[in-house]
Amino acid sequence: MARFLRPLLRGTTYTRLLHLWVPMLIVSVWMFIDASKPYVPALLLIPVALIPAVRMGEGVQARLLLTPGRQDTGISVAPSTTWRDRGHTMLWLEARMALGWVAGPITVWGPILSVTLVGLAVGRVPDGVPVLSSARPHWGYAVLAPLPLIAMYGVVVGLGELATLLARQLLGPSRAERLAALEERTEQLLERNRIARELHDSIGHALTVAVVQAGAARAAGDPEFTERALGAIEETGRAALEDLERVLGVLREVERPVSSRPTLADADRLLESARASGAKVGAEVTGPLDTVPGPVSREGYRILQEALTNVLRHAGSVPVRVRIRVADGTLDLEVRNPLTAAISGPGRGSGLRGIRERAALLGGRARTGPDEGDWQVHAELPTRH
Image (cartoon, rainbow, N blue to C red; front, side, top):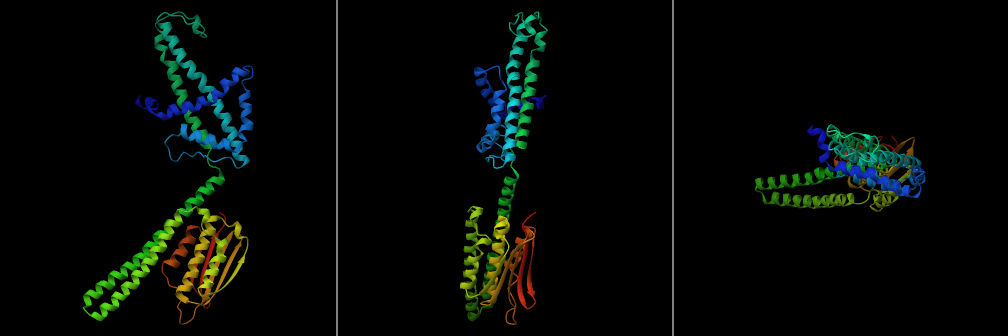
């Protein structure tokens, strides 16, 4: 019994009832204009549904009244962008009015019938109530008096649930909106992963070196060794500060809109920066870069940036060949530089591991290491799923 009455204590029940009543306000106004054509408001909703902003307004109302206080409502508040969105909005408006036609009369006649049955039980014959106006007073009608209220209660709760279900189906995020949300979520996960990697590898490594050097200097008791250890700690600390500044830059970048972050369309700027640092960079770009999805293009830029940084850091001013190719649903990115006896190739730290992790998060793969006398970074990222 307590479970049956629980909806009476929830505010959602009453906000949903208000949502069901709203269409009847329009109908009530029209009935004063021409009561002989009650179907006209439903017809007028068809052209109204074609207005893009109507979907947004209906989504806002549905969130506020059908799912108040919930974070994940499954209801979009974006305007219509496709004919599919407009069609769903039209179906929603018609369904909402139909539910209002059911909810309106029953919430009016339910209490009226209950009061009438109570009047018959105490000997008062109603006037103007169908069927009951010809009934004879009898105390037994008092037993039937709660039934209209119970029926009204059940219908109102059921219609509220049905309206919420329809709102999620017809006003839910479109495919484009779901793709945009997935892209945003993917970008956030990639950025968080990169921040964690930078903090663990760069800062953690620097602090570990400093602690080991300090412990060794104290244990050695040799002024010359202590001097060298302090110099190493100073150098390590300076590098740690640089790494920390870079990580803070990543944190600040997370606050920027996703669309403002660099993509492979900005690769020329990255290549020019590498050339200004002394590297002899040759680039070959083929295929339509502008068709590459945002997350893939942004991570491709980061992979290229990390590969060029590793070349400058570990190999110095050597010739670098960059190849970027978009074809057959794949972004193919390759960076190669000569691998000589004096240069063992870029290190195997967080940079190369980060390249592989970035590729894996996007469903692609990356290879790093010696290849035919060169050091190679080769990433393949899918551009469609």
